[in-house]
Length: 561
Image (cartoon, rainbow, N blue to C red; front, side, top):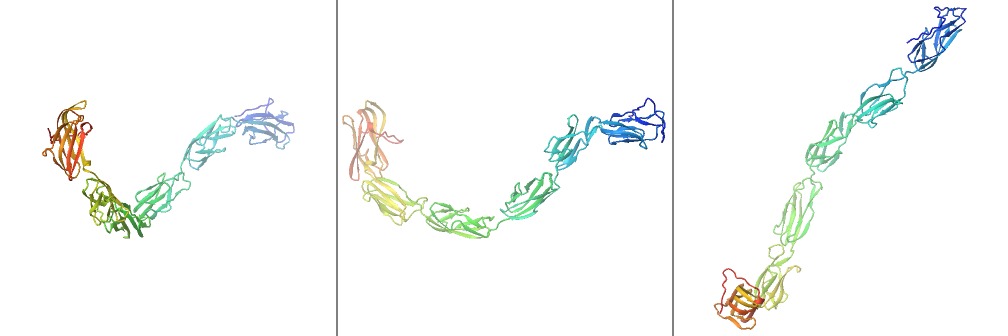
């Protein structure tokens, strides 16, 4: 815009190079204040006013602040002070005006973009535009909403640090004006991946490591996922460690997050045996014992460790397919293993010893002059042991009278009442089996009991049918000769029989009974007389002190008078 400043005495319409009548010139203002881009007209005043103005020269002391044209029109360029001078060409006359240019207040800020995308490690220099464009130059304050993703320096240079988003804000120091830009940081994706090897041959049990190189070097995510298409052949962990598991081929793959991949083909071969031995070259087993023999291969990592087992004498020792040896009987046998890989052979000599012996009877109770056959066997089998010698701790009570050394049986004969121990002694002198022999009298093998039917007991006086039962628990017969019943208080005989038809022989493990209907008999006493081995014996029991017997189906109760 232009403002015209006019002197009250007018403006000359022409200038002459020489006007001897001109005494001085002056400007319409000695000081002016204006704003950037504002234009004002300075007017030259001649003195005397009737003189003619010559051709004039205009000059600004600071064209960066104020410029002036040949007509005296001044324009503010930037904030500051400048002196505008007008003079004649010969510099004999001049006049100046001090001009102060004030800045235009900024009303807003803008950035060169409202949203940008950068790759990790990328950068962008922001450009700030003030509104209006010629407004006063401000000092800017920059800030990042997420410094882990994007940083910004004091000059507005943005650097991308990691994948994500952040808001960049620029403002004046007073925070009254601001502008923002959204910055999206994208990853640098892998373009290619290269493994250190693409083919590898290993034996079962072998281990190796795969490494990789991703390009470009500044790829953001350099992590890979390792996989094997046949983990039964080769397995791989998250660190690229490959372990050979079984014979065959597997493809081990490394894949980036954006599905760029590289493959290593792994060929796994078996580990061949170069030799084989057994964990034991000899064993001592007791009969019935088991022991596992192991095949030891060279190298230890041999793949095929299958062996075939056999025994040179399966009556002495047998072996399972797992190498478990069982001792069966005394003697020696060779256990042999033949490897499936290479056909290597190894053997173990097994000596089987007895674990102990046992008799078919550990206790015998018998009458004198009784003979009993006993056998001696190995402790853990039914096999006969034929090398025992026999001994009696008391030959006067019982002794061995039949068979003997070289057999597995012996006849024990009882002689007199008492106790003896019959021992079978193994050939090694340490293993012994014993039988305790108790020789008793005939009365020790007789048991008595009461059988009653519908009795009444009134203060010990018995009414009803009462019978005495006698049982022969020995191995020899006895002969019953008489039976009597007595009143337990008075001793009066209340019943008696010596009838052979009701008495007579009582065979081993047999019983007999006799009795009658009693009428007010006080706790009756029953007495039996029998003969055995030419001698007469008497046994008795009383009703109140007797063990009650029982009547089996089919038993007959025998009544006496």
